[in-house]
Image (cartoon, rainbow, N blue to C red):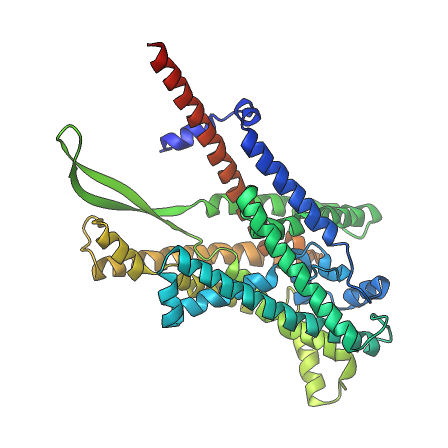
Length: 455
C-alpha cells in the first residue's frame, strides 16, 4: 500500500516545478557542471598524437580499457586530461571502506560521526592521488613502449619530462573532477561523482545507436538482431528499475510512550533491506579482475615469442578469457556472486544495527534484542542477497551472451552500464521529488499561516 508521501509525490505537477526556483537553479548548475565535464574530455594530454592514439586503442579493444573508457565518456580513448575519470577515487573509497571494516583504528574513526567521516574522506583523497599518480605513470610509459612496439610514435617527445607532465596533468584532471562532483552534490542535485560516471556512459549511447543502425543500413547487422538488441536494452532498464526499488521491510517496535493526551502509544517503523545491497560494485570488480589479464596480454602480445611457454599462456588467455567465451561467462558469474556477498558484508553490519536498535529501545517483534537480533538480521540479509546476486548475474551475463551470439561488442549496452545509469537516474529523480515535496509542504504551511491571521 502506498504511503501518504508517495501519494503526494504522485500528485506533483509541472506547475509546482515552475515555482520551485531553488530546484531549477540546482538543476541548471548540475547541467552546467556536466557540460564542463564533457568539454574537458576533449582536451588531450600535452605531447601525444591523437591519430596514433586512436589506432592504438582500436588494437586493444575488448579489455579492461573498454570499461574505463565507457565510464570516462571516451576520455581514455582520446587520452584527455580526465582520461582516468573518477575511477581512482572509486577504487580508493572501496579500499578505505574495506580497511575501516578490518582495521581497529579506522573502525573507531568510522564511529566518531562527522569528524571521523571527514578524516576517512581525507584518506580517500590521498589514496586517489596516489592511485592516479601510479596509473598515470603506467599509462605514460605504456604509451611510449606500446607505440614503439607497434611501429607508431604515440608520444611526440618521449622521455622522463613527458612522463612527469602526464602524471601531473592526470592528477590535476582527476582532482578537478572530484571537486566538480562535490560542487554538484552541495550546490546541484544528486550525487556528483555518480552523475559524472553516468554522464560519461550516456555520452557514449548516441554512438552506440549510430553503430547499431549503421550496421543495419549497410547490411552487416540483421534487422531482427537490431530489434532484439533494442528490446533487450528496454527490458533490462525496466527490470533493473523494478528490482532496485525492491526491499525487505522488517517491522521495528518501540516501547509505549505517553502522548499529549495521556494515552500510551507504541511507535512502529520499518527497517528496509535492499535486495541489491552491494549496488554496482560486484560487476565492476568481477569484470576488472577478469579483463585485467586480457589487457596485459594484449599489450605484451607483440613482444612475446608465441613458441615459448609464456607465449602459449598469452594465446590461451586471449582465446578463453575474451568477452562472451564460456570460461569468461562462468568466471564472471562466479565473481559477481562472490563480490555480492563480500561487499554486502562490508557495507551492512548486523551487529552494529542490532546495537543501535537496542540503544534506542527498538526491537523486532518475536526476536530478543542484542545477539538474537543480529543473528536474525544476518539470516534475512543472507537470503535476500541470494536474490540480489541472481538478479545482478542475470542483468550482466544475459547482454554478454546476446552480444557474443550476434557479434556486437557494445560496452554501453552491458549490464554494468545499465545498472549505473538506472541507479543514478532513480536516485536523482527521488531527490527532485523530495525538493518538490518540501516546496509543496512549504506552500501549505504559508497558506495555513495566512488563514490563521485572517481568523
